[in-house]
Image: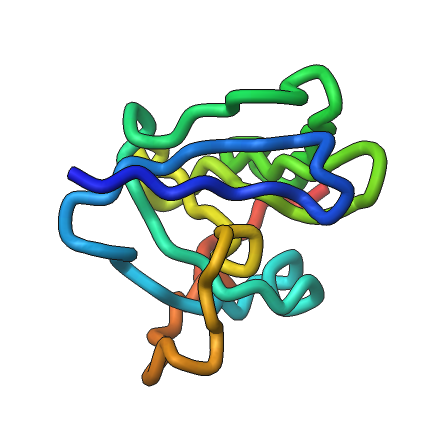
Length: 122
């Protein structure tokens, strides 16, 4: 296992991700939330992502079914991670927050069809 560190832009929020075989399930999602933020995400089980500093600086955003949980730094606004609606036992995390990662070197990025999920009428 290899542990990588990530931060938001202002570094008020820091987190660690335990990787077993590199970054897994790299994707972009086409739901209204993800397509607007444009993040490239990877996934891990809940027990493999830890907030190590600034948990009090995280803001939670939920909408629609309120199953998914999206966290952002309340200081700089950067999306750090989310708990997925489709697989609530996993976090998606923002690869751009990971120290030393070169997003141009990722190669092919998969797609997640979050827009096809059934929406609840408001």
